[in-house]
Amino acid sequence: MRSFLLLSLFITLSLNSIAQTKGIPFGINICGAEFEEKTLPGILNQDYAYPSENDMEYFYQQGFQLMTIPFKWERVQNIPGGDLNQENIDEIRRVLLYCAPRNIKVILTMHNFGRYRIAETDHVVGGKTVTRNHFTDFWMKMARALKDVKNIYGFEIMSEPHDMGEFDWFTTAQEAINGIRTIDKKTAIIISGDNYANAEKWWQYSDVLKNLTDPSNSIIYDAHCYFDKNYSGRYAESYENSGVDEYTGVMRIMPFVRWLKDNNKQGAIGEYGIPDNDLRWLKILDNFLKYLSENNINGSYWAAGSRWDKYPLSVQPIAQEDRPQMEVLLRYKKTNPNPNSSFSFLLPETFLFLPNSTLLPKSKGGVYAPASVEKKLKTSKHN
Image (tube, rainbow, N blue to C red):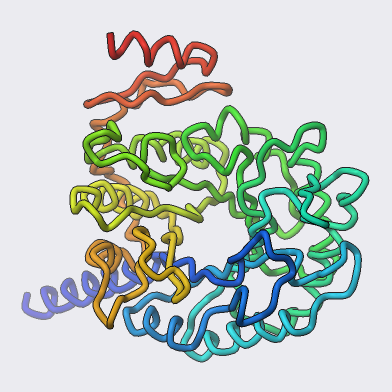
């Protein structure tokens, strides 16, 4: 009997150990290389800078094993179709090589919003000036330049495309995928949603992306989710005036999570963040990350980096003091999948998720309605 109990205990501990290793890492956006976007290409380490060793070491010591590095296309390739800028490539490699022995994976994300800036004019990718071929050319050259590096978690080929007009994001993304796969067949390709990657309106603006094809079957779909009134992440309104409660984050991300499940896709949340000026935001962030963790969806907090100074969303330490948001982030270094959601009471399973629809938050549930009547329903709700 004693032997049986010991065997059972061993099996239980082993299974628990396996379960713990199944999670995927949450990460941090470490910014700086995308700063001063009106000064392009700018001067390295003056107008912009890639993460310092101190920046990366702080989050490594905190236990994070995923870092996202935003950059500007115009700095890494000064002319569309031209050679890559070696100075910037060297800096990207420096970051990657610093992270590699620490078992940190890195996401490289182009922060250009579907555009390339020439002579103070933003040109939408796909037009005559900055073509889809230019975009594909860039990513083929990046894949070739970094092919020997082993700790790249994924290439996010464009963050937050929006208002692409006739130059639809789907076609642009597909051509880039095809080009990358002629060079690199292993690295994940991260596809940001249209309309600034808005998670709540993913069905309305980004449903077509489910038809993207990748011969390596390694696409990760990226949505962004902020909790302020206008979804921008600027948090211009106070907590009281933002119309939120502790479940706002969960409600806003639910449509994207359901889309991933319905279409058998892999996803991540590339940006989310809260200000440090009201501790009530922490509960929203905690519920949000718990919901993602239970659904085995990871993400990268926005943001960190020594150039942020006193930016309210930043988790860069000030005078060696942790920022308030770290209290929550440190609970979620990896996902912890759980088929029994803690938040099932928020949205009945019988609700239908349809294209061109938007989730309208309520205190204990939601209404899923065509986007065309969204404004009318919101108005009637407050009358």
